[in-house]
Image (cartoon, rainbow, N blue to C red; front, side, top):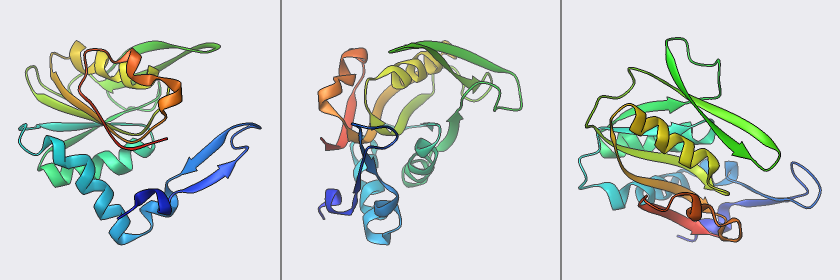
Length: 170
């Protein structure tokens, strides 16, 4: 199945000059969604993944389904102030400023094998921050899986020590 045929291109969103790859049209298709999850999970089937860490917000959709496919738990990584219990924070740089992500401090255990999942690998900042959060908790990042990788933004350069897998490349 050609998953790219199910992704809607939206020009000038969220601002002029940006071409947004809208995956909602892929997710609404039962076969497309199932195929997406199968392709994201396949490289990690034999890695004994204990939990999938999904990055807010579309990473929740994909990560939860990948966790189910792998027989693993699911852990959300969120923007600051969104998690109800005690959390740890990782700040990262943006083109103009900084942002941060948080994870519950008891979300994963030392030594657990973790897969990080998100919809898009762009510049790599959120993915690198998420890997740092997982490692701060003593877990082992087994890989990072993305539906889409925007090759022209070179996000892999911020993930030099990670096993990065992407289903689609633009």
